[in-house]
Length: 288
Image (cartoon, rainbow, N blue to C red; front, side):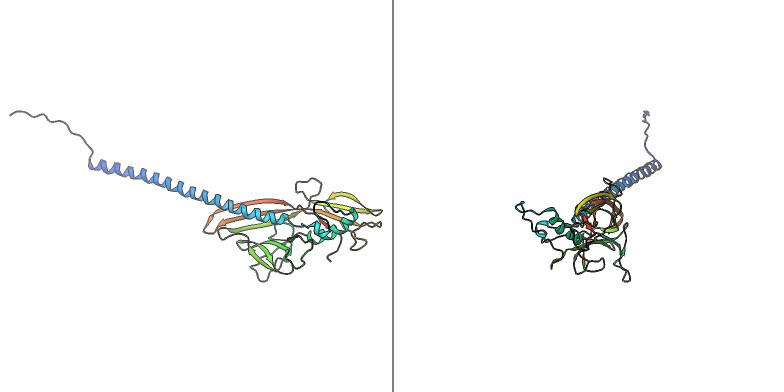
C-alpha cells in the first residue's frame, strides 16, 4: 500500500470559541456603556446650556425693568420742552424735581410667600423674595394719573412673577403674571438693597446729603445714612433755617436659580447687581 502523508490540522476548540465570544461581549458591553454615558452627559450639557440661556433672559428682563425704577419724564413733569428751547432756573427745577423723586424713587424689599394664605409681607434688606418699585411708564411726569406705574418682582413657588396691574402697591396686592414660560422652574430668588458707606464703593450706592445754608443748597458727603430735616414741610426750596434732604444712590442685587421641570438634575444659577440709575430724594414729604 502506498503510504499517505497527512498534514497536521489545527483550529479552535468549542471551549475556546465560547471563551473568546464571552470576552468580546464583555468588551463590547463596556464600549456601549461608555457611549451611552457620553450621550447622556452630552444631552445634560446641552440641556444645562439651554436652561442657562433661558435663565439669563429672565434675569436680564428683571434687571432691565428694575433699572428703570425712579424714572421720571422731566420734560412733562417740569414743563421743559425737548431740545432745550425752554429752561428752568436751578431753584425752580429743584422745586419740581425733588417731589417727583420722592414719588417715583422708593425701592422696597419684602419677604413674602404668596402660597401661604396666612402670610403677610415683611420688610427686609437682603435675601428678600419681593421688590417693589415705580417708574413713569407713560411719560406724563405724574405718578398714577389713571395709569398703572406701581411695579414689582416676586417669587411665587417655581415662578418669577411681575406685577402688571392693580391698585395700591404691595407684594400681596394687584395682578401678578409669570415672567417666563413653563420650561424652567425657579428654585431661588433673592433681592438685596445696598447703600455704600463711601463714595466710589463697589456697590455704586450711598446717601448724599444736601444741606441748606443761607437759602442755597450745599453738597455734603457720601455716607451710609442721612437724616432728612424738612424744616419748611413740603417746600423743596432750601430754607435758611437749615433744611437737609438726602439723595440716595442705591443698587439692588438679584440672585436667581432654576431647574428643568422634567429633570431636577439639570440646574443653573446666575446673579447680577443693578445700579439704579435714577436717584431718590428723601426728606420732602410731598406724597405723605
